[in-house]
Figure 1: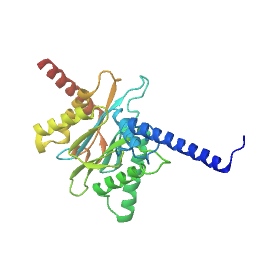
Figure 2: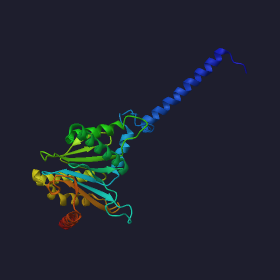
Figure 3: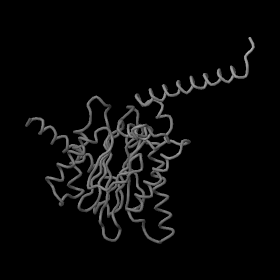
Figure 4: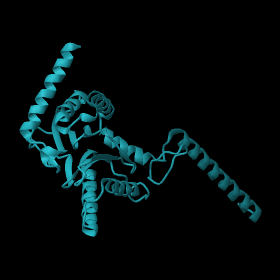
Length: 283
């Protein structure tokens, strides 16, 4: 079959129009379901969402609950560590870390990702100290970590961090405490008290109640029992058993980051369980 040049052009034009029609149908289907827009962190969906960043947020929501409270005299961190095996040595899989002598971090989400951010925070604190001869201000440290996290949402060759961190600091001179939350999209927020992880909504409600009753007189030692109570209260019975990990920066630790002594933490945890049992009996 011999085709003239005009017929060949007509056939190719028809094929091109058909392919464009197929592409339009595919894009229309993607816009309706959201499929296809989550293949790269650099792609926005038609309604302005970046699905890869949202998936990173889901990774945070699937982890154990982490809470931090900025008290009158310092900052206290508490995390719910799921026990994935009965053979785990107590204290393994830490989720609270020191950054400098006067600052620390509690994490929620993927632990391996979290450790990278802890290392970055330590590097930023060390570089600032080497350059200026003084500790890095909490606001600057939080913003630098936020910028680092946000950079991982801008390039197709990398993925967002699947974790959120709670950064607490106490000023070495003024002893003024501050608390920041850095989320997977790089957003930095300053809080009096907040939570991340699976039970964050219920934990935030309990923290609000705690501040409503205690006011501005809440100290880290007073908050110790309450943070243990909050984590036991928001723990889902369907989940695995968990181990409590609590750290603080307060007068009891000489305003330096330190884990709460085991005997004090166990006593606080026992009192928290007793309080919860009393509440259940009253109901």
